[in-house]
Length: 456
Image 1: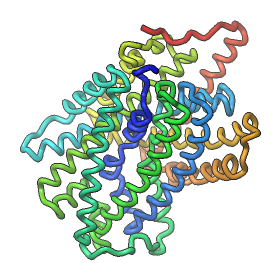
Image 2: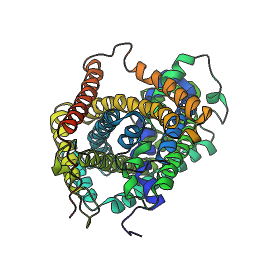
Image 3: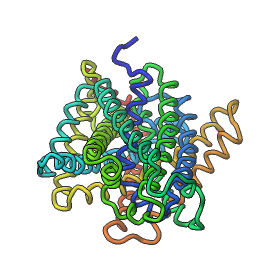
Image 4: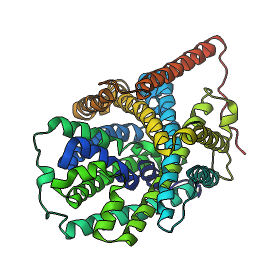
């Protein structure tokens, strides 16, 4: 057995790191509260159900296919080579945007944390430092990356569970009650809040990018995906409920307008020391997310390069470090460039907002393609395993549910520059389809073996 191969727990670590549950709860509940009011927990329950549908499709595909490339491998088998590449190309955009955006977010929370000690550091310096640190850690392979990410994320989750439990034990501002779970007639608001609940799960499929590095990929990846979705769902509902009663049902606008709700609640219910700990937990969660996203992006572009779509330079794999080192270098450099071009002139919040929006639009399309691919794969290639419920009802429901947050990002037409991002994603996807078409045509005219990874 290759000792460098990832265990089930290490594969799970990379998946949970990409989601970054603690970081997600630090900034997504405020926007959700703007729409859903006190019914944020309902939005998270519905969002969790939607992600369970999509997660089930990933589980079905990853239990049959363990090739490198994640959704590229799945949809190449299900929908054909061109749509397989488009799926992988779209997911690469998502992970690249999440990595670049999270770099700014990590720097922002890093600055908030050090301010507790009377220190104020330039955010650009922090952003560049965190990108370089992730670059350095990633260069030493997935084992180190997964262990660092898991340690950081577990500590941050435990800290946030402690704060939430403390709030609930103290009864919040107006006592423990079931009001957040009782619809107030704001069905539209709950639906809009669901968008941000869905976004909290973005990246749950991250472990599928590392399938070939797992000891038992057909067991490890499905477990990691399912455990991440279910674990995150329970965590989100619990913490969102604690936040609502912590601010109080009659003071929900305070939550909606708070720039740092967890910091506020920590100070309110435990004092400044807990606020410092919470900010540290959020910083660790964001850093773990940066680790997860950057590595997932590196492995996706390594897989696509290995199939002959991208430059051969990106196929270099170091067996000593167990890392696609040139892909790691490339993604890290792109993150630095993105920060210089967007983060420096507009700030880390704008960097994250813009890149996360682009990445999310692309990710929703990827999820829909995987749902459709699950139906097609079992209908055409696994007829003996075909099930109406598993392979028709669940994938179709997943597509329908995902259509809502996708449409909500398109209409009403958002303000500039957000209105341009859908066109960018469409151009990116069209470019991917054209690349796949040209490669297919070239192979028909001059069939040559695809150059695989260069190993050293």
